[in-house]
Amino acid sequence: MYKFLALASLLSFSVFAQDEIGFSKGNTFTNHEVRGSFTLQCPTRSAYATCAGNYLSPVEADYFVHPDAIVADKIELSNVNGRGRTVKKDANFDSDKLRSTKRFNLWIATLTQRPLLKMGANNISYKLSNEGSVVKEGTFEVNVNNAPATVCRHDFLRSFNDSDCNFPSNYCGQYFDRCL
Image 1 (cartoon, rainbow, N blue to C red):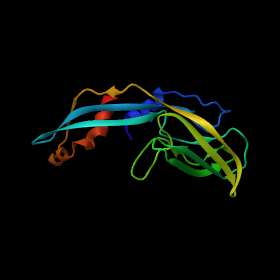
Image 2 (image 1 turned 90 degrees about the vertical axis):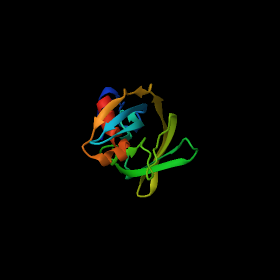
Image 3 (image 1 turned 180 degrees about the vertical axis):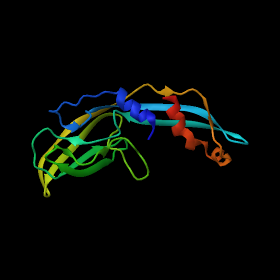
């Protein structure tokens, strides 16, 4: 993906306490907003674009972890999002590794994906089950803090294809890579 996501992951060091229920990178995350503009120079014309986005550090998807030796094969997480709707996500659970077998989407919102977290305090409910029977359930808190917005300076990018100037926003990722 973008270089700035990798950079943010390295810069936002988070230590996970092994006796804590939650996510493998910890239960405190930071939302970073970035924005700016650029001019895309194509062979016969140019186009102006404004870009805005955000990302979560240290990660946007993470494993659920539980410190206790529990025999479970499934984990279900739920949280009330910013619109008052409950978001539920589930995955298989690996009792040997004491974590989910896949990462949960914490922040990315698309037409087909809803993030688990929202800004501020999140009270996540969890249910660990084995063969359909709940073996452990509870809640844990995850905080998402807002970092100051990053405003990138205006930049100039080049394309050797005139049709790219029809949709200059397709270059926002490249623009952010150069900025961050």
